[in-house]
View 1 (tube, rainbow, N blue to C red):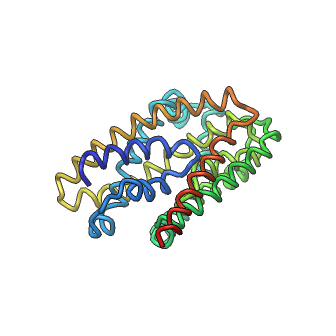
View 2: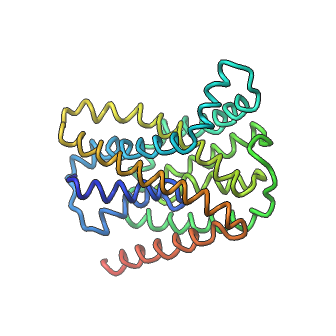
View 3: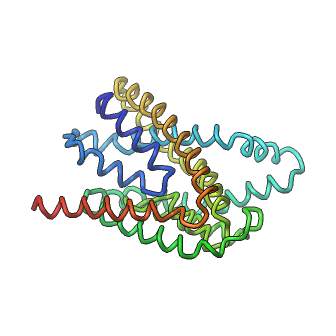
Amino acid sequence: MDFSQTFILAIVQGITELFPISSVAHSVLTPYVFNWNLDTAFLKEHFLPFMVMLHLGTAVALLLFFGSEWTEIIKSLCKRDNQSRRLLYLILAGTIPAAIIGFTLEKPLRFLFSNVTSAAFFLMVNGCLLYWGEKIRSKGVKTIQELSYKEAVIIGLFQSLALVPGFSRSGATITAGFTAGLKHSESVRFSMLLATPIIIGAGILEVPKLLQTGLGDLLQVAIVGGIASGIAAFLSVWLMMKWFHKNEISAMRPFAWYCWIAGGLFLISQFVSL
């Protein structure tokens, strides 16, 4: 990939990773929209670690945005801060199931479903998930600290839906948060906190593969992309938190409509081209 392609993909990834509209689907659909003829060897060997490098930019953005919370969580390991330590355990409970499923099923699932037609279809299904989440959000009265560990695990299981291009990680976890009774803003906050260890874990597994290729130019392009993605992600999470604070009644609805319209247009384009 060249710098212009990487910059476009990084901006799209940084925005869509945190908004509930599936960054994985958009990483499949973006090359299609711009008619990029990406090298087959690159797609087979380097695309996944390349995308993970972009995701690491998102993880850095999340660490910066929620820096005070992560600082308190880390401090709780060394001192008696029951509230921050319990938040750490809840994050771990939500991370472990997704990490196990992701480690075992990520490659086969993305190989099976990483095409424009399936990404567009599941993007529309994701819209249905968001719309359903909006319908049940009125139940939300709890804070994160009031979650049980069982509820945190269930939210973590929902997070695994993002392994299928078209499903949004943030959309799935926010909706699962609603089912657990979390308030709008608390569900978004927990979703963002859950994202950080998952992304960093993926980076630990995949980025060394990119380093081992010896492709210096590709690595430089990926680093630039990671920086661009991180900047876009920081702005996105700031907008997300403001949006969900101000729009408690219908915060998810615009994203559901976007998924339906975008997914439908891509499906129509596929049938027309047949």
